[in-house]
Image (cartoon, rainbow, N blue to C red; front, side, top):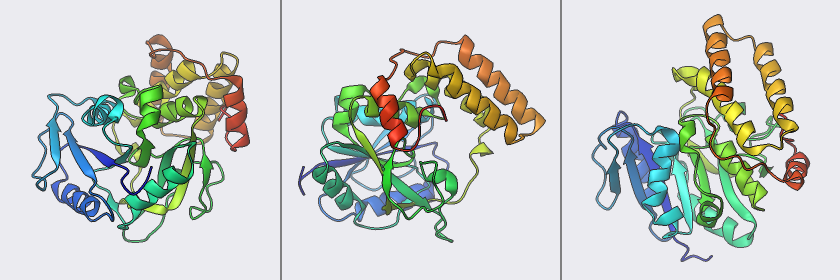
Length: 294
């Protein structure tokens, strides 16, 4: 890769945040270096007015976050191969600096093993990064960059060779844990993932539970994630740990009921193809600070 490395961006929208979307697109257009080509996917909704040169796709139905992003990937050719790097950005986010695309080019160029970069998400008013937005267990210092084992779905960059090798996001997940599914497959194929505190996406502080389907899909997809990717002996360990953590967090009665409904659904419904990771990948995850039991 070099300064001529082609960078694209995928943004999915429900069409309900036109001002925020326009601000995001403006921040992409201001990136240093060669132009970043952008595709905006209307996920079961019309796409608001966008600047000239931005491609749009309007889907007749909401395919969920991974499904919508997969459509955006294919807009850049099979597996996104028409570009070298794809940025995936939330439509209510904003690139804080003009050098983010250039930093991505340099990072991927300097490290042939690097497959995915997770950006730092910061509140635009306070500058605070929520602990849950630091994709590692030791999350107290969001300003520390490091190797990690997963990434943030709406603030990341992916080398398209990764998508060509391991496939896209699991569309059947619809919402929640699709990033970890892709991350585990990428790590199993030998790629690495970095969290970079200097690559910043401004995003208003929100709670993930604002989504009505949150508790159900978090639980269902956690089970699917394990069934699809973990060696058989680790599946009950991983899910047992998450069951205990959920109970310790003492969710409300309705939330817990939805969670257990999703947990049952995860066991009783098809999870997609099962490709358990190698044991050496389990060891790699462990050395990176997050063994796949938590």
